Figure (cartoon, rainbow over the protein chains, first blue to last red):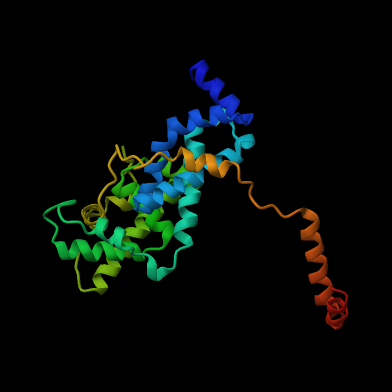
Length: 181
Length: 82
């Protein structure tokens, strides 16, 4: 790690606001994208990015520079995003913005019929949150399992199991609707 | 890159479901960024201290709950003195 980065991290740990701003400028896009990958709504991701950095600032004294800022920030961001997902009522799972994003024409494999795509997107929103998040990060976003595991505070095996269970539930849901995937 | 090397995920129907999911849910662009500068909002929130309840208040509430649970007849007396 370069000396200047170490210096910024040390100053941040001591509560230096300028060091915090420096880290914010450096990491905000990364944190924003990670949250967006989980919540799938740009406006919400912006609000949750702000919330994440508040929590990061308040927790500065607990920061361990040896473990790196990015994984720590990602873990806090994941917690914030999961809290937000859990706080939503089941009937409001599919917001208009989310629906538009999920079923947008021209996305994904053109060989997959639009109806199947829409049904899959709907079934996806019905998955339990912890399975949905693991599946979207691992399958759709193709993030490394190790990174997902660290962010969720679980093992790599648990991530793989969640993905497997999510896909199985998705298949069962589609079959109940008369679609043979 | 994704580590897709576990046994269950090699099953053909699982692979098919993965393809379906990828087709239904678009990937977030690697260059996606917030549409506005978030720093002013972060700065504004930094001044706001989170609400903290002192431990003594929690102890008091706990004591009251225990008292009411042990002696329900004490509730009118407590209400009288509140």
